[in-house]
Image 1: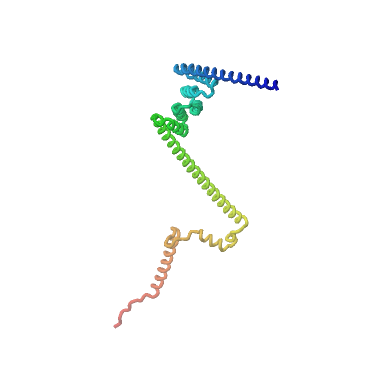
Image 2 (image 1 turned 30 degrees about the vertical axis):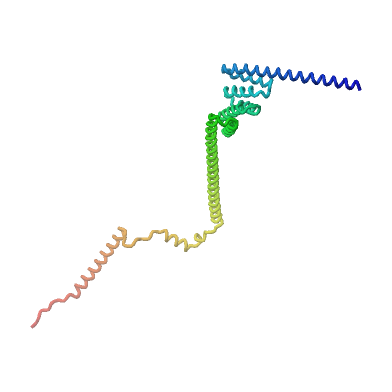
Length: 270
């Protein structure tokens, strides 16, 4: 029993020693974190933003929830135009900060970072959160109005783009349907032509060629008909010669008749 009591006493002493050591280490890390933040602030004032970022990261390595270190790191990244990397640091500050003013500043800068990356919806939400913590900040209110205007424009542009895409798709579908109709029409005409050729090959439709009467009628229709009242020079010549011969014959007969039956005047005997 005595041994057990002694063992418990030793354990309590060891636990107390570890706890005290941990507390000492935690205080030391906090002091080191504050020191790195002060170092980072000096570099930041000298516009050495990359070196300042390193110092702030070291501070967070010693105290992960040190809101001043995360907030300053976000500012250093923002100054180096690393806007996307700055956003998580401002988010961390907004979560860990105890006073509303620090939260409002973190959300405000988060909105600025999102504006730079054209994340207008995120910027609107960030500015609104900033105003919830500090409703009297006119700068944040102005930035919110700008972000809301840009968001509305983006939504309208997306709506117009979707409409244009839909119209283009409808036009493509219509053109495709028209092409299919033309193709079907060409195929139908080709089928009709093939049927006609097959009919000719089978001998159908040759009855007119086999019927001589139809051939004569066809030839008569094809021959030019002589027009009435028009004679060729040769026909006129032959007609004149025929009339001249007839006139000569008639004259000859008349002369013969005149010589035979002409009356001689008689002299009166009284």
